[in-house]
Image 1 (cartoon, rainbow, N blue to C red):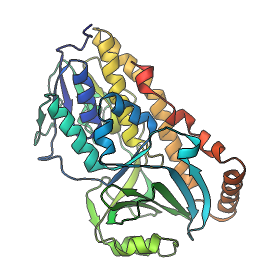
Image 2: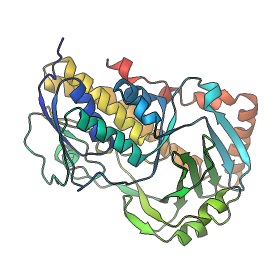
Image 3: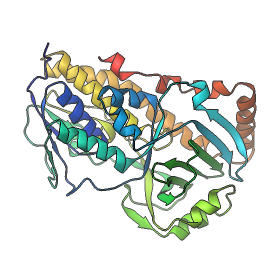
Length: 375
């Protein structure tokens, strides 16, 4: 039976992960969707992403699993190390979560898969279409990111605050495709790295600093600054940083989860609704979950206002909890002195005695199934 979205016109503002996934999910349920994107092309921006099972359940349900597997790598483990490179704990995803789909992918490859699926479904993706004021539409979806015009229209002007942390992103050539993410934890700084398909390696390095950097990914920096900040790190880090020839830097700002996500005519999702610090690898995953739930709620009833209200009620508590967990991780990675020694000792003991217990702390994230929650 056709659902309530059948032939309903929808405008999605934003052609990133959130916008394209939402467009596909809405189109699969019969909506007449168009995507407006301010960029002149869906170019290669950003770097790597970790897609955990909660997001993969949505992407698989949308029929994208095979295409994504072809351009991504499986993630089998997360290895925690101290700054010297010595192992603190290894979280074996393959052993303790058998069958769960953790994937490592370049953001550009994910966008390519989503764009191809959107265009293949007959969704017009209108590039170079900047939206300065929200357009009139019966249903308007704001997937327009950190500086969302639609969020501002719903909530008024809000001012984020600088966390005192600056991050670098880089991608380097590296044929070591050991399928695991590695986290190197030092005093006041940490570095995360994992392989990507095509012989690449993703690097994200975060430093506590008083310097105020611009928010966003587009500011280039001198690789020498990255190397200097992590000069004391050991293991494979020096070799990785030695070959970095391009790097981007940005300041990490904390945003509140939006108080108001919808007004009966428009709704926001992804970073427009709940920007997060990159310490739980859930930014893209939350956007993908949002997209499925939004489409399912709208398809379940012709009462659009009730549907959008249900969407906000379902999504806001979970995303707020994930954002809070990312904020906590930002502190845990950068411990110093006795607190750092105690925390690393506890992780080492836990990894030997009950390695599955460390992972079980995140069951509420990874075991969540948006498809079952809102079929």
